[in-house]
Length: 362
Image 1 (cartoon, rainbow, N blue to C red):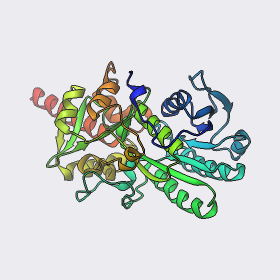
Image 2 (cartoon, rainbow, N blue to C red; image 1 turned 180 degrees about the horizontal axis):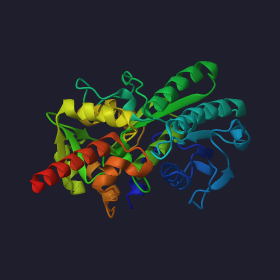
Image 3 (cartoon, rainbow, N blue to C red; image 1 turned 45 degrees about the horizontal axis):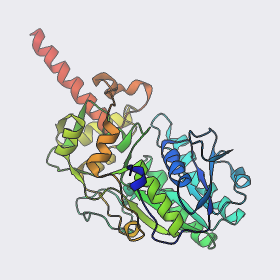
């Protein structure tokens, strides 16, 4: 049995055949979800909603902008709506990221209520729990949301979570599930962990012991299937069981680390963000310093099981990927703001190079 076919199975009895619509269907995660749903018992038809046609021939494509209120016209005869149109492309400016993520979720829930859809699955992230030294390890389903807005794309997910709560009061007939995956890796996902895995070196803040948890996109797609068939609602954590230590991540990726003192890392990150070199504020360093690994007890109880371990998920993503970011590019990011860790690693490398050049000229 192939790996994707070993993915999540629903404990609940399959329905007579659901028609499921998927927004953001042309994205890497959207395509994984479409493939998984289209091959599953209990799913009669998959409607792919996006402005571009997804590369999944077994689904029916309806051209639709997930942020357009006219989305409702594409939802006739749909039983469940899966909304994975979350904007995390670092090439987009913050205003466009927010428009796509927050407006898209609002449109999805409103359109579902208007067309009689009773079950909506929204994609969020485990990052909304926040990264703190006193976090439980792992964080359970439905733990308090402790992350605070900091000007990053995390703000958009917090807004989606808040709107989902309000929508539950406005549209009580619509049941909503919120999937909160760990760091998602998989086919076509170029910058997982906000680009923290992109650079030639991996950033470590001195004195911390980072842990890493991953969620393969195929496992996330399996979680969507379980959620739809079992009609699960509320917050649902998604991730491979357990986590990896920093040394294991370095071994798998074949990378070495760069260690910076906390004060230097935060101070430099603050300056780089103010100068537009880093797209993320210094507060995003918390996710490299403190734990935010999650359990997935509710999904497991419903029959879902990840097909990938953390090591397998990371190895699968990294296999055959060349290092595309040079030392200079990591600091300057080629015209697009880099993730905070990549910008710090690149800046540290340039500082070391300048020091060596000065020393050699003496």
